[in-house]
Amino acid sequence: MAAAAGVSTATVSQTVNGTGRITEATRRRVLDAVAELGWSPSASATALRRARTRTIALVVRRATDVLGADPHFGELITGLEGELAPRGYGLLLHLVADMAQESALYERLVAEGRVDGAVLTDARADDPRPPLLRGLGLPAVLLSAPDPASPVVNVGLGQQGAGVREAVAHLLELGHRRIACVTGPAELTHTRLRRAAFEDALADAGVRPVAVRETDFTEAAAVAATEELLALADRPTAVVYSNDSMAVCGIGTAQRAGLRVPRDLSVVGYDNLPLGRWMYPRLTTVDQQVQAVGAAAARALLAECGEDVPAPVLDGRPRLVVRETTGPAPTAP
Image (cartoon, rainbow, N blue to C red; front, side, top):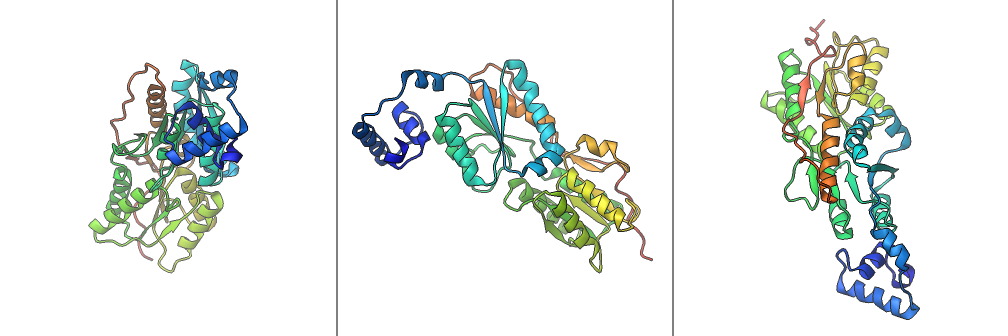
C-alpha cells in the first residue's frame, strides 16, 4: 500500500486512522491507492496498534563503542528507569548512524505501534525531530534547555552556560591565561552554548582561548585533540573538556607525555559522573544533574502519555565541582 501511494507506512497509517498532519494532496493519493487496491486495515491489527505498549523509545545517535565507553548514558538511563519501571513502562534503546535513520525509525515505530512515546537526545539547531514526532502524533520530550517555542516539551537545566563560566572563572583565579577547550560536534545545541559561554567568559577577562578543538566524543578524537594542544609552541596550561570521558582521556594523554596533572596541566570535565570521583587525581567537573534530568524527562513524558504523575521539578543549573585536577598555573621556567 505504501509503495503504491509513494509514501511511508506511517503516512498510510495516519491517513487511514485520521491522525497526524497530512496534506490534502497526500491524503488523496493514499485514499486513491486504497480504493484501487481494495485494501482495508486489519481490525485486530488496528486495535493492537492503538493499545498501550507501555514502552518508551530512547534513540541515540552514537556508535556502539562510543555508547559503551560513555557513562553519561548509563546515568541518563538510570534516571529514566527510576521513574518508568515503577509504573510498568519499559525503555526501548535504539542506536542510529544519522538523522535519516533516526527519522525513518520513528516512522516505523509509530506505524507498527511499538511505543507510546520517545525521549529525544542531542538537540540540534533546526532540529527536524520535534515537528516530525508532533506530526506523527507520538508524545515526546527533548533533552535540552527549556524552550517554550519548541513543538515538544524540552527538559533540562536552565542557564546552560553557567557551569562553563564558573570553570573559566576558577581557572582564571588560579592564574591560568593559556586555556583551551575540547568540544563535541558543532551541530549540537549544547556544544554551541558551552563554546559560547567559554569564549565569552574569557573575553570578559580580556583573554583569548589558546585553541578550541571539535571532536565526535570518541576516545581517539579526545586523545588526538589533546596531543595537538600539547604540541603547540605555546601549549595550554588548562583544558576544559565537553564531557568527563574525554577529560579522562586527556589526563591519560598528558601523563603519557610526561606532564603532571594538575601541576603542569589543569583539566576540567563536564557531567560529574561517578568515574570522576573514583579516579586519581579526582576530576574537577561541571555537574549537570544527569540522573535528575533523566527522571524529570520520564515524568514529563509520562504526563504527555496521559499518566497521572507528579510534575517534574528542575530548579537548578550546571555548577562547577572543584576537586583535584585543577591547580595554580605553572610558573614559567
